[in-house]
Each structure stands twice: as structure tokens, then as C-alpha cells.
Length: 267
Image (cartoon, rainbow, N blue to C red; front, side, top):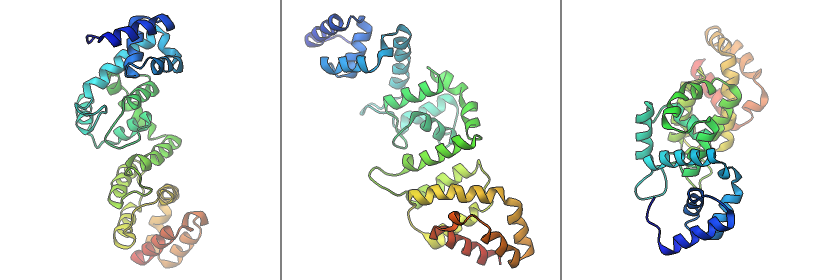
């Protein structure tokens, strides 16, 4: 423990006297509150589990993990720290499992984690150490096979990737994320979709378009045999295929234009 100043020591003793907590727990709460006595009390009473010995021990482990990867200049884990974390759990920083981890953390911004986000993620996964995180990688990959969880991760990715204060996702960023996400879903029209967006649409991606594209891709993936069939047999069957798609999925002008693009390209 660092040597305390006279004011910090006084606040520590007052906090322990008022809350009847041990020195370790009192120091932890005060350090979170920047040694403000009133705010430290709020921290303690807002987190009753901190009074439990196991919770304090667990918090120390979280603190140790965070401090290992925390940036030297700001109170965050940034790209360099995330890269070192990836090295330690033996995954590529571009691996989709890092998106799943960010989803567990409820991370607000790509390429950075706050201390609370790290704690939330570890608690969500039921782990306390980096070694246990490495052991959870197969589980996190399996979550992508759950359609409900995949939808949550997919929708989370939009806000996680967009720049602060922006309502749309840059097209290049959206393409990279779709490539990562749809690698799991094997959407047969993905290459056509990319060609259309880059050649015809060429605009940032709204949240509505992002969300609707998953629905659109899911329908097309489930009808993959039909897509291959109509591509072989010609225009009349293509017409039948296109007009039996759920109307809601083609009501957005972008998806309607894409269907026209796909039709012209193939027929």
C-alpha cells in the first residue's frame, strides 16, 4: 500500500469508525472515491457485496488485472493494453471473440475498457483472472452459435464501433464488422452486398439499416438453396423468389435497391 498523507489517514480512520469496516475495505472505497469521505460512503452502501470478505478478495484480483493492462497516462485500458491482453490469452486482437468479450463488458467504445467495464465483464463470465479468461474462450465462441445471443452481439457492435457523438457507422467500418460477423453466419449474398454498398450506396450506415440487414441476411441464409436454384434457372424463378421475401425486409429503399442490383447482376 502507498504511504498515506495525513489527510488520507484521517479520512481512513473516520471512514472505518463510521462504517465499521476493515482497513483494506475502507482503503479500497476511499481510493475509488478519490479519498472523498462522503463519496466513499456512497460507494460502500451502493455495493453491499463489498462487505463480504470474498468480494473484497475478488475485487483485489480485478484490480490486479486492470493495473496490469492500464495505460500509463489515462485511467483506461487502451489499444496497447488490449494487445498485451490478447497476447496473454493467445487470440488475435481482430478475433471475433474480443467483440464477444466487449459485449460481456458492455464496453462503450472500441479499443478501450474502463475498470468498471472490465469488472462487469469478468463478473458476467464468472471469472477472476486472465488465466480463467483464456479458459472461457471456447465458451465465448459457442455463444455466437446461439441465435438470440448473436443478435444481441450484432446489435451491440453498432454502438461499440461508431465514433462518439455520431449516429451512423462509417461504411468502411461497417464492412469490416459485417465481414467479421457474417463469417459466422455464411450469408451467401455477402459479396454482392459489399459490391452494392461500395458501388451504389457509398454512404455511412444508419442503425436501422444495420439492424434490418441482419433480418435480411437471415432470411437469405435460410433460403440459400433457393438462391442457388433461381440463379441457375433464370428470371421467372428469380421474380418469384424476390417477391415472396417478407415485405418488411425490402421496404427499406437500400435493400430494395440491392435486390434490383442483385437481379440485374445475375440476370
